[in-house]
Length: 308
Image 1 (cartoon, helix red, strand yellow):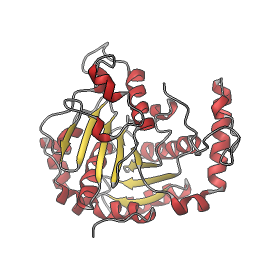
Image 2 (tube, rainbow, N blue to C red):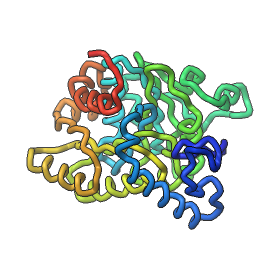
Image 3 (spheres, rainbow, N blue to C red):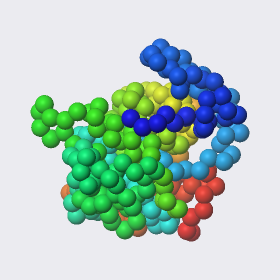
Image 4 (cartoon, one colour):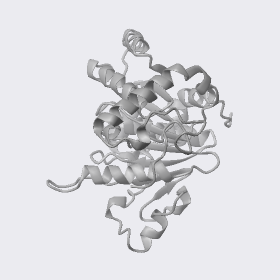
């Protein structure tokens, strides 16, 4: 679906930005795997030079199921709002349906997978490039500076096609262009299936919530490896559900050994658990108090200005 987009930014094959990875002409799974290996090696060799001027526009939140992806997405959106940034949030998790509540919205958006692309709605959805203001209700819900769209949820047995839903997410990430002072946040499915389909291919940043478990640490390493193969230039970890300094130090050391940078820690707050349990939203002020430091660090890394 859609045109090919080079993960390293080349406009055409063989131009000055091309690294001759062969991804644009790969026709088999083996050829695509070899191409991602070339991309990964190029990223490793040029990391310092590239990281000088990477602006954050599209952020994928990926990780183990239950590690806090939706909570981190909502906290980031609220903290960014307090710092003067709008967010366009793509809920691409076909299982977890509570993100809209965390964002403080009154009702969820109608899933894009239920849209008739041949009808009037398809006219605005199929525009390229897309901008967030193209999306109209009921397929988008807004709260403050936050906008939310949902790819779709599997509600019944034998219902839904995860691959088709993934294609919708990929099309949005591929074609949407952020407005000024706007970020795209993508709350992904648990695990690495989305990387297998290349959904994150045009994201510039991956954030991984990591909880105190060996499975979460191992998956973070796999996500880092997968992200490198897609040409994603920034991978950062956010610790969640940490109970004490010993756990925090252990996780930081484990991530360091995998060359995954640590962005910050979400406090193991009773208030977060209480709000999640009751299905209540996170106010921008609460989000800034809880995740403001790590959000500012993310922006500082990219030398992006914000309200102080």
